[in-house]
Length: 381
Image (tube, rainbow, N blue to C red; front, side):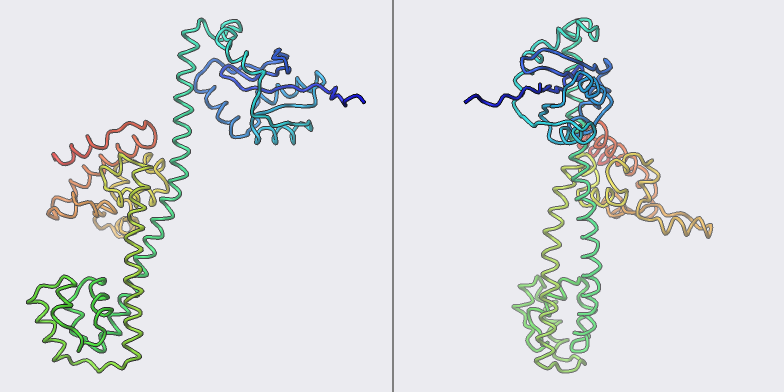
């Protein structure tokens, strides 16, 4: 009994540094379509091919192969195989071990010279090196872009959590204020206030030891206890006490999650924009990227725009009314600005925005590590 033999020939489609080749199973070159001898064009073409795009060179090769009678194409890229199969109505086979390519790739430099694309092997090696660098840069930029989307989403979540915490904390103060109204003016931070409510509940349970555990000084603790004893607030029934302590506990849980989210955002910011994170600080860097909708968009903005990024409403209002424009937006959160005298902040904001613009451009385009130097220059100012 004889075996069934597949008499329809297969063509192996191979992408290389100098072009796309159609080879027989034995490695014989049947057809070729060469790339222009330009590193940037070659890198772009190979990058598009590896992402499954049917570029003009492979389209031309596919047409030539069909005219020669080939209807079975062998690829190493699944996405490219699917694209060619659908576009040209041919059978495509996926195979990750393309044996016919070995001899072709070993002699690629000689073929480049033979086809007149390169003058010598040194030129071929130089172009090969440059293409490799460009491909690596494209891969890094694509990865940064993906992670940049995570930065945007996480910063937006952080903003929502801050708004929620503010609403819930104000509600807690209003409700608990019916029982102990004097506490509101004594405790500014919402988290500290929630800690007191969750730990003690009824004002009669407040004691010095517990307050000291929460970080209060002894003198402050004694003063709060006296206020609790003489409070003008209404008594609290057990049901209210339970609900208020539950609300305070949920607020504290949200603060704990917020802290973890900030750590996550910090790691993302360093990954996507190390230079900007060094100069701005990780959280501010992430907020600037989110506001600009990505590190590339931020890098393309002039420093004057970065200076007031986040203060768009105030800027619009100043243009409409003729009042003085804002000196800063989000960058006010940087200690270089908010810790300085008010009269100096305008000049310092311009200096900081200039450094941030340089850092963003390095992260988005060159990949150079200049953050430490920029921060040093900023500190020297």
